[in-house]
Length: 344
Image 1 (tube, rainbow, N blue to C red):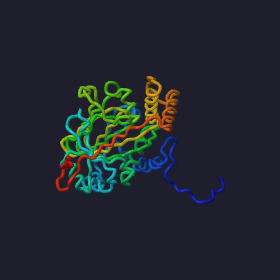
Image 2: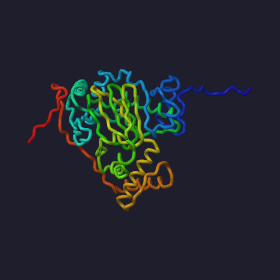
Image 3: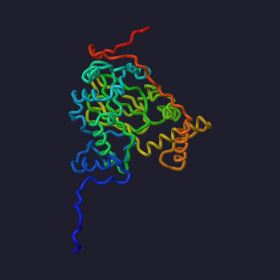
Image 4: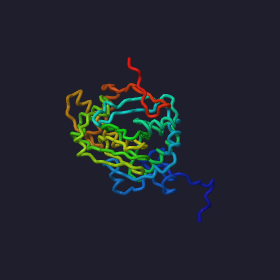
């Protein structure tokens, strides 16, 4: 027998993150997922794990059962969230009329009063990057991404944005697309989501380039005939949908208050795709080229990554950031009523 080992006894702790894991979330996966055996998503399968980030998928979850999303919890969130970052919007009823999307001001309404305005009016409250501002939601984001990375082999996520959406009955989000990957988790109420193919006529390469180069807004013209080619998803509490990167989509609420979690994130392949599209836009505008989108990390894609980084460093493309003016306010004494400024 060998001599007894000298020195203090090692105390077990979280394992080091495996290669490819996020340095922050990796150590959290052991206590969250392995000891407690709790998964945020309740219906993972090997097939879904393999297709995650590449195909449109629906999942089941149990987040809607947590008390943090009841009226008291939502009012508290609205009080804690930085008021200058709170997005308050209203919109028209025609799904083609995306220019009716208007920005408002919450003023000094309390969280309870804002929630009442959402229940009785036609507004859309957008709390972006809630995980950066409210510790409880930072922990929730860590839990969700640890779950994803534990189940999807090789998945590495970054640029994580967990947003909360609190919106009125029958409110809608117009036809648009996002540059990052997206998942939408339904907590309260019901909504319908239409997800369209990443192809003409729904969105072409030129339209994609304009959005990635920030020459135009993420919202753009919509033809109701395109619904025939869309995947329709009915979201109810406990259901989540995620779709292919850059897939156009639109949303309509049912006749009740809706609460959803909207998560945006990047992966190495998603970031590469965004840079390829950016480079294509630069090459088309500067050299008159007619480039195509390459997937993966081949030589052409890597060379376009260099083009995109160089163009950004040199400031070759000037983004046209769309700043919506504030056109209405909210009044605690008139819940749900939009207070329009007096006309000159």
